[in-house]
Each structure stands twice: as structure tokens, then as C-alpha cells.
Length: 209
Image 1 (cartoon, rainbow, N blue to C red):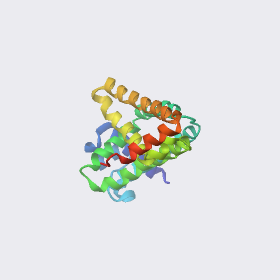
Image 2: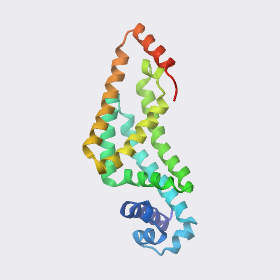
Image 3: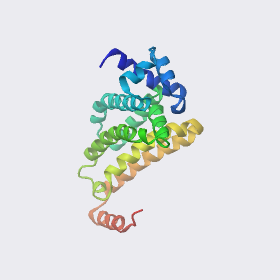
């Protein structure tokens, strides 16, 4: 990748952090990157294409950064502890905010929806892999939608970035609720075979919404 392209990608992320998705333009990106704004269109065609490329590239880099540490996790409680550290570090770096802003922009610009979804899916896939490894052999995995849980966890961490801005104590309570989920899963794992079958039967009969 050329130095100019790299500067444009980094400048895009900086512009999103500083101005929010609504304030991003070729001008604000170029100013953050320290280049002529005509280079935005020369290298990426449109501002939306540059936004998509920046979101995908940045998210892939952060997933690669965290993947080894996620691979060392040995329990759901460890996963949630690491998730707290991940959220805090990514929040300080402004990376959660970037993804949240892209998701907000995608609500009104369908051209951002697909690339933003693809970027979020990188986190979902990574968490899904960890959950499947941790839950292997667990009765919980037999009755739970693990992929859905991975999506819920990923969405929760993005949503907490927005929630913290208006009510940090409530966001902390939401995080604590995820800790309780880990405890509940451990309780399910400790159930005897009769109780497990009863639980599975009840979940199976529960209406899908």
C-alpha cells in the first residue's frame, strides 16, 4: 500500500473521531491526512469508498491484534474479563467510536451498510470461534444459538460505547449482566442429565421471535 493511501486511511479514521460521521468530507479527511483532497477521489473514487476501506482495514488490524490473546482464553469469565480490557483499550484509541459512527451512518446511507457489516462480522467471527471452543462439550451449546450469542456480544460492546456517553454507571451494570450470564452457563454445565434434558426441552418448546 502506498504511503498516500495509508495516510488517507488513517486520516479518515481521525476525521471520524474528531467530526463524527456527519462531519466527514473529502476536505476534513484531507486535512487530517495532510494531503490534497483531490487525492481522495484519485485513490478511492468516492468518500464512501474511502470510509468503507478505512473501516475494513482498521477493524481487520484490531482483530489481528487481539486474536492471540483471545486464543489464550480458557473460560467464559476470562473471555468477559478480556472483553472489558478490549473495550476499554479500543475506547481510548477511539476505535469503538469509529465503528459506532459507521453503524450510525449506515442507517441513512445504504452504501455504508455492507462494508460496515463486513467489518463488524470480523469481530463476530472471532468471538464465535472462541465461544465454540469454550463451549465444546457443554450442554449449553446444545440448546443455545452460539452464533447468535457471538453477534449479541459484539453488538453489546459497540452499544456500550454509546451508552457510556450518557450513563456510564448503567453501562457498567450492563457489563455486569454479561458476567452473570457466564455464571449461569457454568450452572447449566453443573446440572445433572435429567435437569439438562428438562432445560433443553423447555428451551426447544419456547416460541421463536
